[in-house]
Length: 101
Image 1: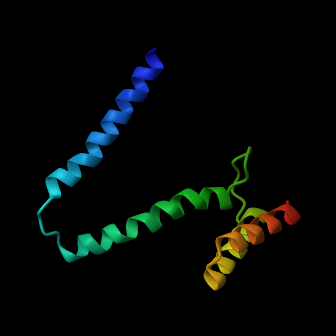
Image 2: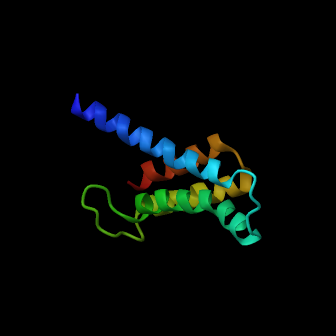
């Protein structure tokens, strides 16, 4: 019961935090720099989520900048940039990871 109350409390807090920005900033004109910065937030969050997976060895947590995960990620990024095809990107990245790992 306690864990469910904790989950509900965290969910309600997260919802109120997100809604507060929408309510407080509604109808206000933001500076151009803030608007440009907010547009970069998704890319920054995605990079923050992906970089540890590519640069650290799972299990041990050691820094491995030249591991197979980084090679597979770079190949997947190149395929995605060149083809813009999700399925081909997944196949290329996972295929190279399976070969190297």
